[in-house]
Length: 363
View 1 (cartoon, rainbow, N blue to C red):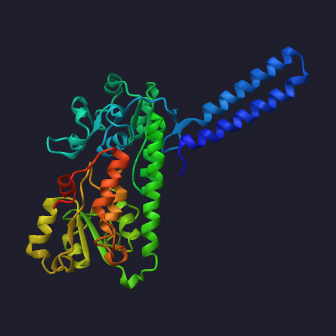
View 2: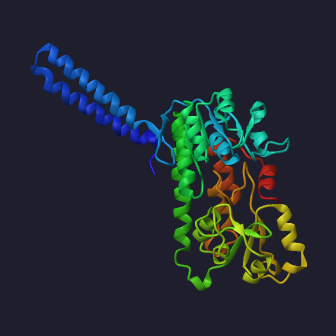
View 3: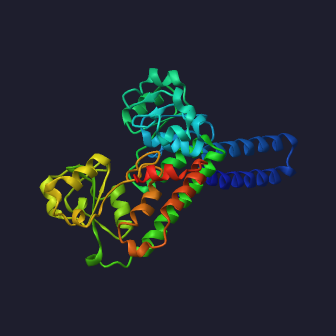
């Protein structure tokens, strides 16, 4: 997937060649004809360039000219995280619902200047409320709100993250809208994430089905996630079988199954979304005979600026972390602390401490 900035370069080059060709053809005509030809060429070039540099949202709609946004209004924590990754504090017009910014949070340490930003939810994103913030761009996954805000002249992009491809696309939309260094960071991120998926899937592609560990990702005691989801992606990329898909879970946010079904599925590995769930699975007697519990293979997903296991910008790191518990023999030698430190330095410009790494990994 190419960034807008790369496409713009090609379009600009083509426009320049067109202008030169038209100018050359006009050299033998009268001065008035030459002027008319030059004006036509200039108009054609300008129109081509403008069309090529429009940022499109996930529905393919033109939203705004590349590089024209100064800040971005977000209504959920994942989108906020993406804005901060490519543009920093100045680019965040708001913080989205669920964005963790307590006194001891990593986000507050990394972005101490966000204390004056309003927290926005999907319901808060009315025309009146958004206009009061005056953002350069709004990111939201509610079609009716997109229509209403656009009708009021507010640049608004439909954005919904459900896969690695849409994570990359979302970050490119933000980067291209802000332009400059933000677009460069977004393009580098796309290369990084695609590289991680390619590297890790290459090592697991020859694992026989009979040898694949059975893994379940639990959001709570009865909610798991099926095929076509972010957990499904990192489980299968690493050569595992997603038990949630076997149980018929639907949707990117997951769906409910029974406790009896989870126990009966008897996965080899359990990854929990939160510490309370981890404590329940590892201490409640009803789970004691599960293979994962007996083998000590129950883990909590890491939490950086957001939880890694779902559709967040730190999703590439989840692949590295989970590799140590899903087919670990295939992925020996991966230093997850080092990968995490390098990622935060490259994409956030932040140096993680040892204590912060321990917190991310719940040590």
